[in-house]
Image (tube, rainbow, N blue to C red; front, top):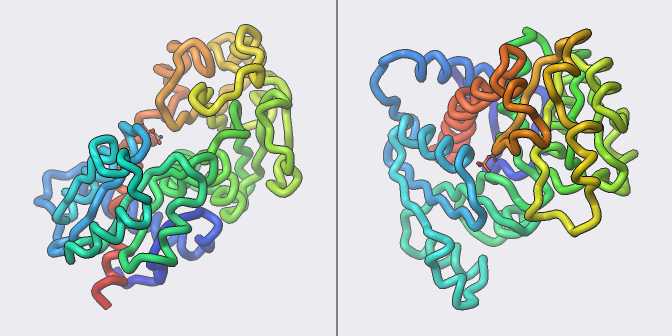
Amino acid sequence: MTSRFTHKHLIQASSLSSEDISFLFDRTSFYLSHLRSSAPKRQELSGISLVFAFFENSTRTRMSFETAARELSADLYSFQAQASSTNKGESLLDTIRNLEAMRRLKILIMRHPHSGAPDFLSTRVQCSIVNGGDGWHQHPTQGLLDAFTLKAYFGEIQSLRVCIVGDILHSRVARSNIEILKTLGAEVAVCAPGTLLPRALEAFGVRVFHHIDDAVAWADALNMLRIQNERMDSGLLPFTEYPSNFGLRMEKLHTRQPVILHPGPINRGVELSSEVADSSHSLILQQVEHGVAVRMAVLASIAENLRL
Ligand code: CP
């Protein structure tokens, strides 16, 4: 397997060409087979130190990157953001420069509530930066794992109809998904109340639906986003009407059965009923499994460039 992935960082999905994504997907398939086997750990990250700096809560992204890094034999260092001197007012840049001064940090995997934080750091520090989600902006490995899951299910992404449903306004997952899916030739739509759509929506180049029934009628796959209460100003959401107009229950799937994705965590009973989330239409746990293999592919590819 030769590297054609030349990126030092992975910060936003728009930096990835279709060739980059194909390369990462080939590698993801390889690592998925590895994960499903009882083969010993691989050595691609042996001798490479990774620091996790998560300034926002995470279950899937954090544990998935950690599983991926351990499976590739990385040296892991965990920076506890909540218990760090950032709480005394130390800046993000000073914090990461101090970690670099300890001479081991090669790859920083970070999540931050402020859009643009990884991009800001990438021009000011020496290490590689992998974005595990920044504010409303980007979540590139989530976009990759969602697209990989669709490719694994349908065989091809080209001309696939994918509708992203819910809180598009606050969603880094939506932004990364739209960029990756369009790069791969999918037809992409969004479905949301007007108050949860970005103002500059035309720049996204997507169709727009305003009722879940229209999305179900059109799509091969629905990516149901979490309602992000922590980023929501009061008044943006018709909360009592949301489940019936934008949520998915089993009775909505009687005439057509698009497959269902959700990045997690799910608000059961709001964007998805439990019956749908746990049904045969749902690819949600496959997304999680694929996420580890995608992150192995990303980390191994970036590490290869570090060794050149
Ligand atoms: N999908 C996702 O980013 O989940 P976490 O917030 O749990 O990492």
